[in-house]
Length: 310
Length: 289
Image (cartoon, rainbow over all chains, first blue to last red; front, side, top):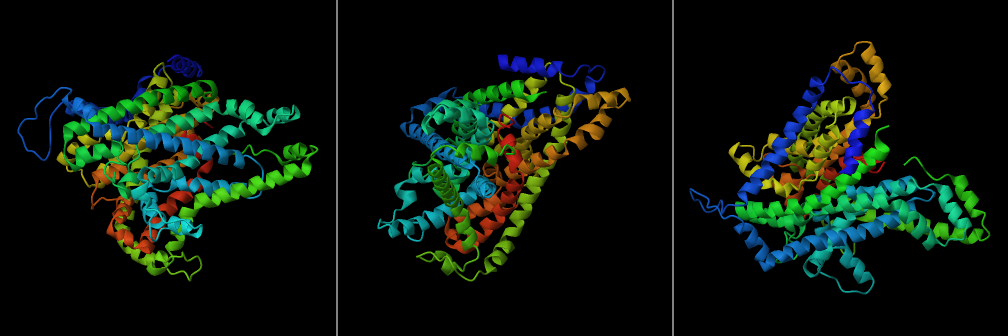
């Protein structure tokens, strides 16, 4: 909040005079503001409202009984739902770990001068731009298929036996797909972070006889803190919401092995018509995400305050 | 992206005693980079190749790497793909247009006439971008059903505008604050109105920012799948829904599926390559530049 206050002071004080036009500028902001309120805040409060009622679209009743926190209690006491929460966390945590390691490695590799550097960076960002549903159908069929998939063929070349990836390692397969999509994101942000590291700092360390690990640990890593924070927060917020990849590959299965929170909400509310329970799960998802979003917004504002407005 | 470490700096580094050792290590690292880039690009390469194969070739084990390319898959895919393509285009372009219509004036006012509350308004707008879609989908679905907006393009455009509006306001605000304030002051001295400042100064001077932000907005709307899969079924179904239909039995036609995938992914990848300098700024909302 202090960072926000600083930012306010900074933005407010920079232009010297702004008298006379107060009404018109705020009229310019109002349409955007009202639009966002109408399409995000209003439906969210309706979600909160619905979450207190027993309401199933498939059971036509004239009144929907008020059940208080009943839907929440039901959600949080059903053992199977812990699996859903656990799946969501495993998917997010696993993806985060893989993308940070691979993205960091690629960022460091790309931060050296060599022939074809721009071309490789361009090729490497491509997987981030692939539509999630395309990723899912291509991986599911052409790469992960136990009989005709490329990975099975590859394994056989090395003397292994083919694996039915989506049946034997469903969560691992989903994590692999999502990591494939998000590694370029981590790489791009971390590469930008690296490029602002002054060359002379590394040279000075090398003259002092630092080995690559010391160089990484004491110079690169401290400089990377902010880029890492951005990657971790934005990726977490986005991977918590993964839906298309699961929808088009495993449909949450086998069983509930790959059902995460968004897919669970889709199943309850839209497939089964259980408005009350689906809404309660939606509220839980929003609370989970908002805790992270608060940190992210603080980080963005901190940067806007220190580096942004000249 | 422009701060490429200079070759001279490296040359200086390499004059260390173990020069040849460093060079060997450097070329090994370069080989590793090429290898990793190939591995990462391979899934894309694989379905691009498959899109030019016959169905039998696409299925073949061991995989076929050399073949005479055919275009039949694209012809078949285009026939069935055209309506979804049209829907995706309308939804992506329409929502981007609306996001700019609503967002540009707001960004301008927040950048050029900041008040005590401006930072708070900006932050709040950005915070709506972090609202999970599952937190609003249930009432939206019911509202859309009652308003006959389910499976319609206006319905999809409404939600994609919501998705892109905070991005547009935030990015355009950041580009417009980079315009020197003295330019506005000079215009004010000449008696320019708010409208003249907007159309005469802010818009033309932030054109590069507008194009970069528009590319990002189009990419996000094009690739969106949650609202598409839950708010449309057939009439307004965009490409994500069309491709999603390959998840079941139709997924047996790998060559056709690949052709559809290529057509779906190609425009966005090209846009992304073009906008890659702005990508970092847009993806991190300016937290990393």
